[in-house]
Length: 502
Ligand code: 0RQ
Image (cartoon, rainbow, N blue to C red):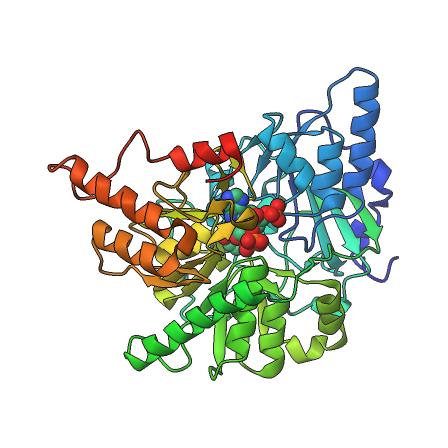
């Protein structure tokens, strides 16, 4: 029996990745583990991709519907996309090959809110789940599963799939046992009850995932690392964004709107989010708590310095340096980190109750505060909405952050009209660029426009934005609430497509 598979029943199912992949058929809906490059299956996707290549070489179709927790890695999403084996995908993707196929129209991508992805599976919106492929750290004698570096949607995939393939990854530290809290009492309407979490540090579930052993058709043992999420050192732009944000939080405390140790923090992914965490670490704030979805390097730093006393999330998303640091000091993090299912880590009820401070990146915002997190020039998806909507709409306070320009200044992040809207003007509290910070709370649309242009737009684009809003304001005396010039509102994007500059 393997040291990690001590369940007598499951140990009889140990096999190769190739044999496991044989159990997945063309047209199947497959639920895979994985969230921001952590805890995804490392061996079965490659074996499956090889089968897809072989089938396509013989002129047969072999494509699956692939549901995950969020982004996976080149050796999961990437390798399957290279095999042209993904027909449908949900939710959140950051793989460049798969992104290309989504944007070329080859893959149908459903960009669901992360907190909705598991419940919508239960509602039946994504069809029947044929197979689950889930990475775990160990299978215990009683069949309980020690989850890996992400929990994501694994509970739902294991519950719903007809067939289950487990990957037991010996590379993941065995000491991960005890880092998880899996809530098994979520029900469907009309049977839902309040989720009994009133403190981000509390446990409400079990440390283990459950699976019906009769459904487990294969157990594959692996020894392979999670994706290495590379961060760049904070540059002047992201440091300026961080500094505006930290200063604003200090003002909020001084104004009596939140306690000195703030409210639970959610931080998105990416370099700007990481720089903001570094900014918080350098600030006088201490004793903070995170109620977030991803623990990235910056959050590990906060835990190390004691700026953060606890982090609730659904996943890690670490660089290789971060992984080594976590593994070497794993006992130090135990009891200070809990990973939950993403329907709980991102649950609107909990985000609202706890009064979370949400900090997420954006692609662009318009002068009235509508935010686009997902689409470049209106049509090409970048990653997806992820958890940004779960947190932002329900947050006590939300921030959307971006450099004021992209592509070397050719694109303004502040535009007359957002070319795609993920977070409406009703949901957005504060915009931050390196130029400054615009607090939009309590402002009418026209007042918001003035403030966003003054505080957040790059000086090169400020006059043109002011000119737009003034002409729009004069254009129709009976339509001055949110003035627009409809024939011009998206002309900045069109100009970029035509000339390479807004
Ligand atoms: O592309 O590298 O090809 O130049 O977008 O931009 O400035 O490096 O910022 O890494 O923080 O990502 C919104 C994409 C920002 C991210 C987004 C281009 C830019 C660059 C990245 P290049 P930056 P970040 C938690 C919450 C949605 C999901 C979310 C995101 C690339 O934050 O995906 O918040 N958010 N989830 O050049 C054209 C513009 C652009 C632009 C930036 N206006 N036009 N390109 N870019 N602005 C996580 C989860 O839920 C899992």
